[in-house]
Length: 374
Image (cartoon, rainbow, N blue to C red; front, side, top):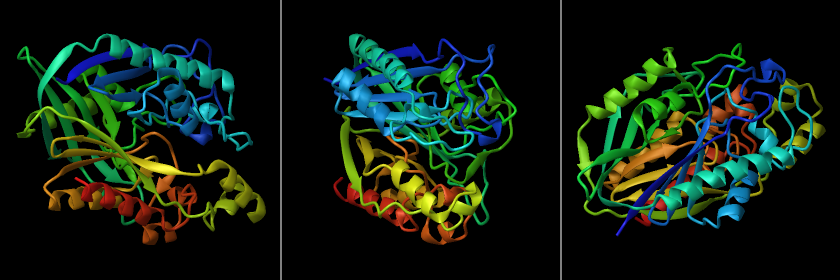
């Protein structure tokens, strides 16, 4: 018997903190009057799924939540809204100064992890509804555009729905690949952007897809969210053969951290300092997080893969008869993730790819291993 529960806590800090996402804000504090931001938890059997209205999910935040809840099968995903407190304050590796980026503050790591743990405990306490089946919907939607030369977004949106033994249904999660940047750098209030609007207006969790080189087609966030929900609602559903969920992880073979050739110049530092910064900031290890519902697989990537990589992984799954949704910002952040050719073209995303030109192929390798086991 597969039981479901839901919980939610407000992540709005009790005092103004630096906003994350746009370094041109120069560390500006958020102003009152915006949207509340939330941690939304969903428990399905022994698996916990959490959507966080934050820029990233640092590995230290995942570790803190696991320590406070005892949850091993845990997927924490940041919506990547650019109008939330700078999550580098929650990253215990961020102990050095970079203009426009906050440094680690243990007080806020403790505060945020307490709030997220509270949402998970609430979901566990509410875990009473029996799931009879899942279905999955997947459709291409024209609401994303490339933000890098030669980029081609992977426009497929995915929805996983739950059908309960009492005859009722509700969405568990939706994914779409577009940066939550409908609010620009001039915005100084907390905003959930389109993922927050999608969750508050249509239920379920919102996860960002392969967003590394993808911007949203400009629309008000509510209109954007409604368009995604409407498009998915009109797509045909594939019913899973049984109500089951599986959790696994797959290690990513990372090369030694090394700055992109443009990194030092772009940040006005010496090559030696660039190497020191990247070596300190890059996590020592990383994993894909895999959630499987029948023949539907959510592949969580701890970073921001490009549309090219997301499409490659999705099509790898299709060849095996598996519906795949690639999710960014899952249980960590190793930076932007590009193919080797794209990395060598340089630019902002390449400069924030911290493990060299082969990281994209390492992600593909790990995804292939995960798919081959299913």
